[in-house]
Length: 335
Ligand code: TRP
Image (cartoon, rainbow, N blue to C red):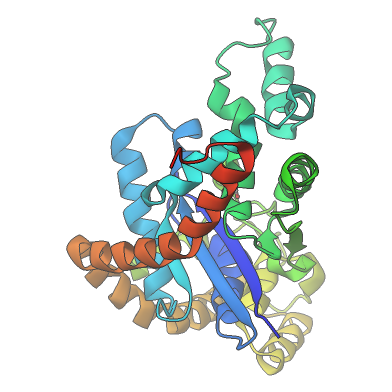
């Protein structure tokens, strides 16, 4: 049986935090170790340009994200790990798909509609600050996915619509030019894969409530100390089901450790002590990858070699396919 193709992209506009680790990085690396999957993970650096026009930030984020995935144990002999911008075939497919994508479909994209709504709420022109990059974002994402004919695409809930659009676009292309694309499916992690942030909402850069994954040990400790708790005193029973400290603990603990912590909450553990135990648990798991991360950040040339090899592997995979697609639409050699 042929292997299932699992593919996902990470927009390179930020610094990885604990929520990214629990929600995306850790499960993706685990999935890539399975025998029956062929995993493709890439840095969506073209997508980053849509949100971020600060070249230094884009570059820094690409380095941090590459070093993070490698430090967390991604096996690049098994999974294919690359930068989107190193694969010109993706940009080429992006255009072929753009030409079969109806504008009406793009009008319905949440990200674009959200930007228009924000402008209207501000009494601005509806198109204020909206680039064609933002408007066409879902087409580029479809190209990322369809270039590899991915079967499964692990994403956050907010991205489900984009996968549905990729299916629509693929279907339209297939209808016009023959059966070339597999229709991809979104895979959304379980509830437990969404980590809470400092204020109890989903940990997210846009809420400014994150704890960085690989900052110094001190910063990790400081971050954990900032997690919001209630005013219950030591000795008073605490509700684990309504605690960000417990929630984050659980994301890193074994079931036995979680059960023990649940008991400690019932027994009235002090918040300071609970946070100390949370820090020790997380730090114990991150200390080694943190070393590796710092080493990779100090040696970008070493990471470049790995990414160039990844790009070569990815391109070898898509080159023939994109050439078939060119032929399918009529871009055929004269001889
Ligand atoms: N848009 C995705 C995000 O912001 C990142 C992304 C780009 C992606 N291309 C992709 C994810 C292709 C899955 C497949 O999270």
